[in-house]
Image 1: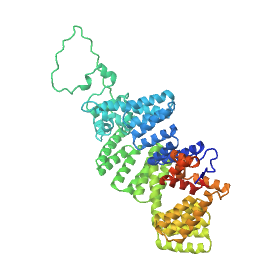
Image 2 (image 1 turned 30 degrees about the vertical axis):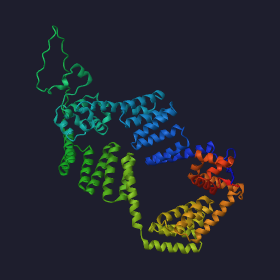
Image 3 (image 1 turned 45 degrees about the vertical axis):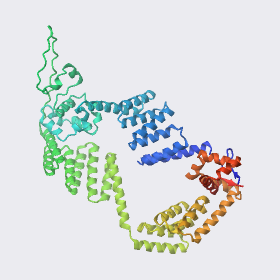
Image 4 (image 1 turned 90 degrees about the horizontal axis):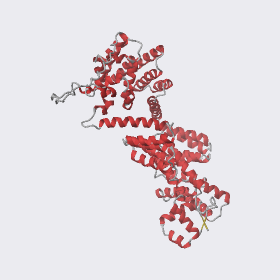
Length: 598
């Protein structure tokens, strides 16, 4: 048997041109980007891998796959791809930011710093490298502190400053008590608790050093003070051993005077007392003493009604107690007070989100959705957006389940059948759709609607319904006839052949399947022997080239050589015909109209 080259490739027999390969790679890349944006990182890795399989010299594909691996916490694989990116494109700054991120994930902070610095040598304004370098440097300092013998308390800054007892220690220490009434200090401490990596940026603030002293129970000094008085850090920590005698110089140097302790004015007045009540309320809340916490928050509100955090904290207590109505009411009070005082919009948005959470617990989903949307108008918060999406899905699911009714579904299906016989196909589609909404597990309705869509030449919708029918009832022949007919009408004869054959494995005597199979063989034979005009042949090949399986066969270097041998080397062709796997692929190309025989 001799083979003729496909009509779609006149210059080179059985070979994809560079434009086709590039298009395939870009398609895989686009699918990977879409999957990554949707948070489907494993799928993104697969698509980027497919893109690399088509074009292994494209640095962007490795960079994108590195990001996907990092999102999956597979930092070893992320580093391998990042290094490949840099090797292919050493003057591309993003490659170094990918490498730095992977090294950071592997806790190789010094190496991460080197990678980010190399990126900044290429583009000193790159934000990803600048922020990554800052994070890596801070993490390196923390890691070095945590590596000391016996463990250095500096290595657990986040846990230490997030301790529930810290506020109590600060409130009872005369040197730090006043800090609790300073909004900028509270903001600074909260920031460090949320992100310990930022501790280094606040070390220049004397208040932070005093807080660290209270938390550690030792005298922590700045670097300059430590150089002037190196023994000062360990006062009161002696183990009782006598110090060795040291010969004193005849003219001892005048000792550097110890720095005077910073004097902090202790706050007074209702606002300070309110802050203390809040601290006590927070401690009671964490201990799950909710009634006690409410008492302290009420006292705080009575002392200072200009801080809505006291009200939102009450709402949190009500939520934990399961009193969701009271929680929602407290949140409304906080929003109203916040509007009156013109407080930060983020605080108002937080109160609204908390109300939405309470409404979800009360299963008042539509109200919760409305509140979440209002909150997002105040502050575009990722947590609020996530809760909104979850609530919308829950509401949709509940409405869908509430609408289910198998009896009414059967009535709608029968009405659709009547309309189909009357050739009123659009009206029949409406009835079948209603039947599916009432009972989405009835495979017969999908088959019926697929027949309607076929009559209306809506082949994509018909294919989807036929495939759903097969999914629900894999051993029912009708689903395969519906799908096979659509593929036949759209001249996808290679696919129609497979569908009819698969259906016959479930029902070997089905006449409709056997007839479809016979008609498909006839059309394939016409195409393979040149009995189809050039225009129709070109259309068939164009459709076939969109099939990933066909693309895979044609992009396989081995199969390219096989196809070349089939046209030019009869001896090699005879050897290839003895290989069942090779011949199955060639038959696939013949059925699709890509290869002709003569």
